[in-house]
Image (cartoon, rainbow, N blue to C red; front, side, top):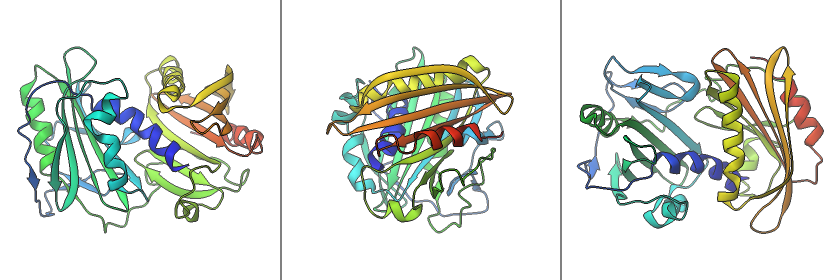
Length: 318
């Protein structure tokens, strides 16, 4: 389960931290004191100071100046940064199909950290990334701006390098949930939050402490979607990335449906991982207005949970 969770997160983060040029002026050592000037990004324990032009997009755990300039915060709790450092090296990222020149180890308020910066695969766009943590969590900041907009690049670097992570902050892990669903169908319990992703397992938080790699689970993720087509595109992109993570898919079935009066797109498939372990995935994305909720159920028990995952997905109300 841990591997699946991190693989999904890393898929997006690697896409956002692909780099291919230059030297970085980002500081080697960040040492910030928490003050009242720093404001918390909802859904995280991260405090930042940013220009008034940056507005929150809470469903994405993002602060955005405009469509071309923004940054996103993603935390992976109950995870070990020292284990995942090896997956954030130049060699590891290039194995995912990206070219990387900048991969800079730094210190972030006492934590080991890695800074990334460089052009993305999208012409004229630059991505900035900062990952840090310890043996109990991994935190990732990912920034986007136009390569020609040096002021925006400087802004993002300043926001990153003057931020503060308060590990002791008492965070309500469900404060960004903008939907409801029937938890009683599976009986699964809340296990963890990663940014705008909510994870449930049979025994909840206790399962995260067992270090099990294979465990049935489901997750719910909120995203911004200007229309239903974009929501479907997000789910299809997620499916397309499984092969990069070494997951083979078969018996793929897709259909447009309606859930509680809202447009939805449902995808089911059989899977096989690198160790030839077979499983089943049930996925559905539900669209309303400019938002969507993505539900993913991973069944590692020969289809035992598939019907209940489908019923849980169909119980979602936005």
